[in-house]
Image (cartoon, rainbow, N blue to C red; front, side, top):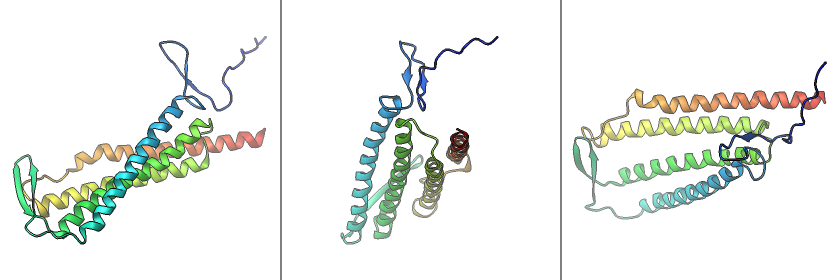
Length: 201
């Protein structure tokens, strides 16, 4: 003889995380932790958008501003080195910073859309699989770009002052990229199971 199961207080698409101070906190849906996280990501996205826009304007301005007798000091663990600020060096630095912040702005754009589906209580959507793959790809490109740029500066612009990144320093970013791609596969499987359950019903 089977006893009837108690009714499930959670609606479809809702999840709760334990709150040791009182009642459980909703993880999905309106008024949940996901809603708070979406607000934080919205603010961060706007800030990154503004920073990227300002840097892009500086790149355009750097093409025209005069750079006569302007020097910069590159500092490192072994001291500092004074270099003449050439237009190529200025454009390289501003361009690298613009690409860096622009890459993270694109990551936040996809992440905001994923969080939006969490607040709707429906995270296993096929679009989220594509968004997670985009995040992993952009993160890999940004990580590789930073590694190449720092190596170029260390060897060509400030040899003996800055040390290039070693392969050991890439382990954490590579691990992060792999985790994002694994999460994309988890979401793809979740979307497939949801679609099969809907067809069965």
